[in-house]
Every structure is written in structure tokens, then in C-alpha cells.
Image 1 (cartoon, rainbow, N blue to C red):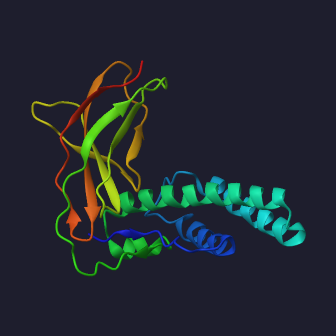
Image 2 (cartoon, rainbow, N blue to C red):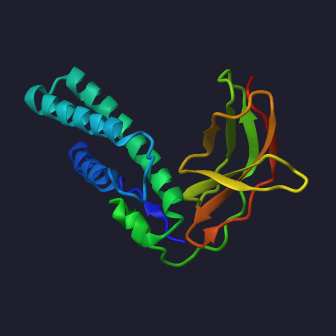
Length: 205
């Protein structure tokens, strides 16, 4: 299974604009990616905002301008990460589909061996109705995580509901007060680990 390469390391703010604009142009209207979050329009707004903040830094080079540029850059980086997770899930690991989004594919190199499943999967309290907030311990060599959910435990019927580069995930629009079961796996150079120990959680009511 091919994996999305973020390609953000060492990228300056101007380079981030170019990369993000290319992603927008490739994803927007691409039938392989019908429902990206944030939407292409919202993503473009973040790109345009960083363009404006870069120009302000070039014009004035004041402390305020640099601070505002850093804020805009962080917001766009987060959006690129969200799109990376979405593209990974929507592509089902197909390298050609990933590349059609504008993202590159990770050079697999030499596998480091199968990763251990993530540990300490649990939940954090939330007041958002219908939400379960998941947290777990990240494996050192994990690039991404798959998040699975089951509505029963006898037997489990796991469904992939998300992909994230982080060690946390918010599951929304669940039935308030209902119990669900969750598990996560780690994705690395050697592929996908086995699932973590299941976590039973009730959607916030």
C-alpha cells in the first residue's frame, strides 16, 4: 500500500504556498476526492491568506507582520495535513490516485519491520454532542494511523473511518449516549500493523 508523503519539512512559507496551490488545483474537481475537508474553497482561502501575509512581511518586515504570517502558515500546514489524511483514505493506498492529488508517495526504502500496534488507546472527555475524542500512544516509526469503528463487539465489525498523521482523532455525528468500539493501527514502511486493543466509548450526550 502506497503512503502519502507530506513533503513539508524545511519548506519556507513561499514554498508552502506553491505546494498548497498545486494540491488545491489537483484535488478540486478530481472525482477521486469528492469531499475533502476542509473544502477546496476554504483551502484556497488559507492559501490566499498566506500569500497576503508573505507580501506584508516583504513590504514591512515588522514583528506584527511576521507573527501574522506564522499564524497563517500554521493554519495552512494543518489544512495540508488534513488533506493528506483524506487523500490516503480516499485513495485506498493506490499510488497513481495519490499522485493525482498533487501529493508525492513515500519512498518505501527498506522496511523497518512490522510496527507494534498503537498502545493506550483511550478517550478524552468532550462536551460536543455525538462526539468521541480518541487518544493513543504513537509508535516511533509510524507515519500515519488508521482509525476503525465497530457498532458491536460480538463479533466486531470493523470499518475504516479515518486516517490521521497524529495520535488523536475526533469521531463526530454519532448517536449520543450510544456505545461504540474503536481500534487504531500504525502505518509504516513495512505496511500496516495489527489493530490496537479495542476501546469502548460512549458518544457524548
